[in-house]
Length: 166
Image 1 (cartoon, rainbow, N blue to C red):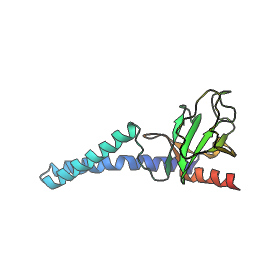
Image 2: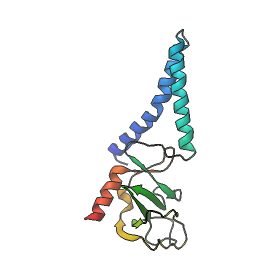
Image 3: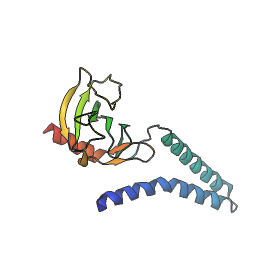
Image 4: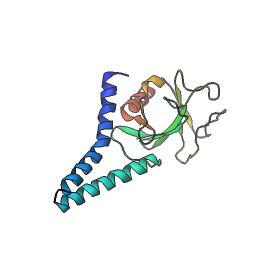
């Protein structure tokens, strides 16, 4: 893990703690005699709790710099995943699905039709008829995050998609 990547991860984990710290501080200050500040602190804690509850239960909470993915497999990187980016669905799966535990060398990228709602599987897999293969990308170029769901870093995803376009 590079220093910049670990600093970015630490920054976003710190951002996740800020609402809890601010809400707790406001609640504590409000209990010192100011009911309006106490109410504001309670409101901040309630919103932070709802967002946390929603993200833990699988609802897509927008996160800056990250794109939500539907991952298959519990490894890092995931065995296969689906992401919607710029109005189209992209399925990333290992070149030999069913032959090994995960994408050691890279992912095959398949552009799927707009109305496709399937999920990748571990067994032999056939892409939908209307899909088209975009190419093979190295798995090491994609950065993943697993905080309240599965996400891929948008910058790394866009860089991979640009390399496929050229």
